[in-house]
Each structure stands twice: as structure tokens, then as C-alpha cells.
Amino acid sequence: IAVSVDPSAMPRIEDPNMINIMRRCDLIRGIYISRIQTEKADVCICPDMSDTHWSEFLSSREFMRIGEEEARKRLPEIRKATRRRRNWLFRLLSS
Image 1 (cartoon, rainbow, N blue to C red):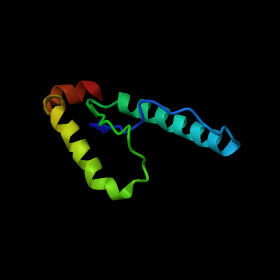
Image 2 (image 1 turned 60 degrees about the horizontal axis):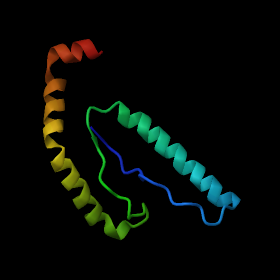
Image 3 (image 1 turned 30 degrees about the vertical axis):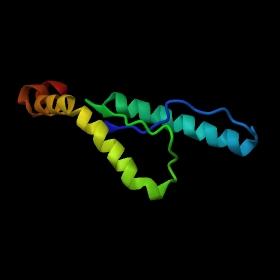
Image 4 (image 1 turned 180 degrees about the vertical axis):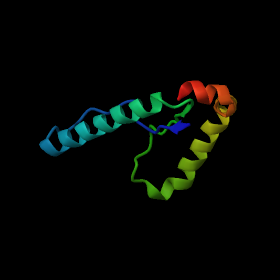
């Protein structure tokens, strides 16, 4: 089970200076690596965090609530994936 809070869209860089371009490159690299990792997951929980910034530490309870809601929506898929993982034949063939 994976969780991805990657942005679905990136705003235009208003001031395209070297620092902002480097930050954007780092963000794109992070999103790319995250997508590679989430593709390997049986279930990926992707809460909508589009109106948030990673540095909003005071909003952590709200972030957790959003994540819990999204996880509850995906419970049937999560249960199905965990049943499949427990199956000894599935584990044997996926090794």
C-alpha cells in the first residue's frame, strides 16, 4: 500500500530565476521517483492535497483527516490486496 501526496498540477513559475528553476527540477524529479514507487504498490492512496504546502505543519491534523477519508474510500481495494498477499500461492509465484 502506497500513499502519494504529489501535486496534480504545478503552477507556472512567476519569477524564473536559477533558484526557482532548480526547485522546480527537484520537484519534478521527486514526482517522477514517487510515481515509479507507487506503480509497484497494490493500492495507492492519493488524497487531494492540491491546496496545501508541505511546510504547513500546523495543519497536520487536517492532512491526516484527509488521508483517513481517502483510505476509507479505498478499503475494499486494500482488503482485496491484503487477501491476495496472504495467499501462499500468490506469494510463491510473485517471488
